[in-house]
Length: 323
Image 1 (cartoon, rainbow, N blue to C red):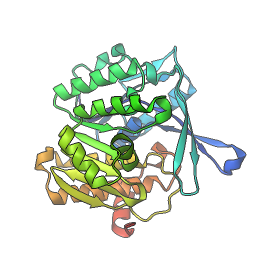
Image 2: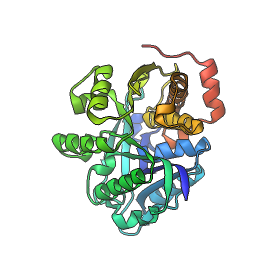
Image 3: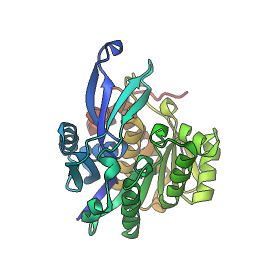
């Protein structure tokens, strides 16, 4: 079996504020960074699969159904009878920026193990994606790293998102060490400027990207900057790109959707990173910014995924937000 894209990691339920926030009402939305990326790509027509573990409970069933509705292959998704599905409560400020409170002790995704990924043998993909949330605890950490190594051996381009969630680590130094150890596996890196500051103590995106490239030899580096867009270093050349000027309601999944937009255009070109031209790379980022910007105009991540028509309309009609 061959896919264009496979991701491994967490899928969970995000409970986002609904209506009057002070009324403590929450709306249930499926989420989780690796699942978000897989869902965006699948909805845009890319053959996409997700590897992960949820509880065989109403939340886990809801997560699996959301992936199926987005056309993501769920054949490699495990439904646990022993562990429940992870939950996260999201709080939003007046600009739509979010914070998470996780309920993830002894839950299913943390307990993804080597037996659970055995079905991946013989399965290949153009891109294989993982994030650092999968590295926070065993046995999921070992299972994730083994799956990534197998994919790399089979020739997949490895995409990595540090996706820092400090409360899940418990120790900042351990988080830095484990997250940075995984950089050696990456061919593509999507990191936020806040994460770069945490990991390297560098606030300047150009300096951070250059240091990452020199240290880890990653040819495709993206540092996302929220409403300020993205700075990227690809094949040694820097690129500035900008978000679109849309009304932001909820930023959940914006970075994941941006990454999916880049990978969508890259998959359609069917080229190695070295073969990408400057025009193609600039177009990738324009498209990705439209995807990421549109996702912020609705609540939730997977429920907010735009159509190709909406993305192209945004690129043609909406102004860039240059801050």
